[in-house]
Length: 474
Image (cartoon, rainbow, N blue to C red; front, top):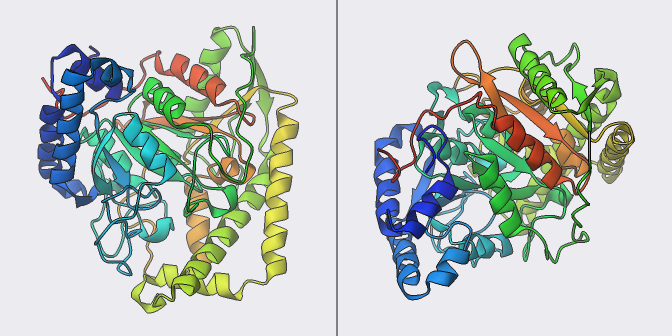
């Protein structure tokens, strides 16, 4: 078993399989941790009965069908779904909005069904901003989600509740979604691992509710690269969606060309300690026998701008369409949401088409870069997680809001609009003990390559988790 500072969901699953812990005991510990960490605001909705029932089913399977139990990647491991995306049957998603009452609960999405087939036991929903429109998880309806490493700071967004719950040890792994950095930004804020998979690798049906024209993807936030690799393997493929299933490329033999992007331009400067972490990660990979290829901000600046514009326009049209289709009262939403709705309603089709073409060109820019390099190491965040309230949604200036998000995570949405895979993980701590996250981006389909390199970086041991996992605490 790993030390408490490095334990993960795989360790928890192994404890069940070895008989050191029952699934029910772990679920009880997670529920108790929810109460202990209530002030973090990570949990938006809790169904203890659902969680305990699922855990008891897994305990029964462990006794009666041990081979089937052992074959599940995360048999009996407690988890939470995000209050946006999915859905998971029995968990009433509201997308962080007062528009929806917490009642009922839709049938499992394809992805939720695979979560359950992997053995994960969902018992609640994690906090997200209203309709995922922020890089902080502070919906007006509450709760305000705080960073377990420093509760005065944001846990990020839009999967902030997922990240806070995993970092606090409430759960060891949590469902998350990413349309503009929403897996990677919270993971980076909280010292965790987050993969935005290749477009088309994850199932999004049958409703494709969080698809957003292909920029959104679902997976999880975890405490280790191996957990991310395991959940990716358990969920990927046979997506029955608008994109062809992603074939896994053959492993690249020998030395890799590591592109090093340690600059985010004058408009979106990144703090020196974060750039140093990126350079240190690239240097570490160089020592493993790979070759560094320096890249400049000029190589990606136009693609970053096109990506930011496409993200803003796509989410505006999406939220406007949702309101109109469901005939919802926009006055029940936050001021920022109302502004995005009006922006989407007023947007000419030609403007959206132009933004989508810009996203295609951004993808081509990356393809051209991947003629020169095999993977790119770059910053994830421009600075440490900012204080609570840094992304207010009580005003209607969408341009200002989008600009604040881009300034915080300049290179986040590039992977979403292009479809390329991207992973973040911590590579050291700053002077305040907060994580120094880095980001790796690879060509389409090269998720396994990113996971392999991330595992090597993680093994250098530059980051340690603060909080033990519920159920595994000494």
